[in-house]
Length: 279
Image (cartoon, rainbow, N blue to C red; front, side, top):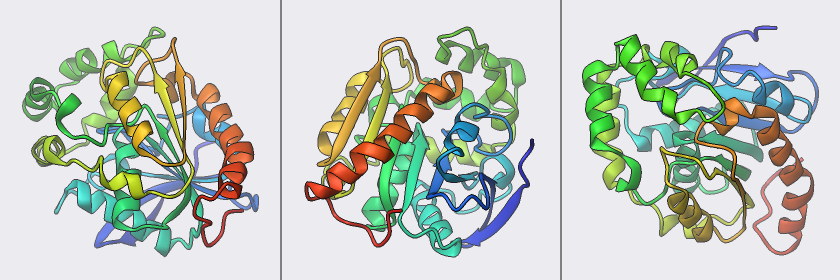
């Protein structure tokens, strides 16, 4: 069943989201998509329903993406981080779990750096690295800036990211919505946005879920991010790639649920910062 599209005004932007598992009384989780993707619609069709068995999931489209695509003014990585913190405040999601794919993972980290205590725990799925330039390929940037509205070019760009037979078609609808100025801003901002030292102060439990076949974010970068986090559990799947949350959504959900059920309470008991509200 298609979830109702809703909007919240936060940090000066009108941002779209959907709720999975509404009215269940389950713990809240905020989910954020990867770059040039979307959280709303069917992009994560296996992941979000599986998570909704345990959480009330707020699937958010970032500024300039998906059903929030018209909100591209003032786009920057800092604005995204501030947007997420503002959404959590506006929706009253105190102590929520944060789940982010790719640049969504980086956004969560940057949000906790800028707004400590926004989340109770975090799950970073094939996350963009915290060290900046490593995987911001200028050739990819040039392609997105110049041909980001060309469906065939975009299919060719995304197909290699799938390791279980996907052709990238699922990404095309979302990326065609992204304004060229967003690509220009991202590829100017991310290569120099280094937060690898700041994330050492993130004192909440974090799950880093990697795919060894990831051709977008090198495994070494994801591992370096995990090593910088003081309360981190890292899991690597040798058979998965960058699109792990899309291709193997139930697998990713299982890891997230186990992390929340077992690792988060144990990590808090061992001395991680206790958030205002966890469950």
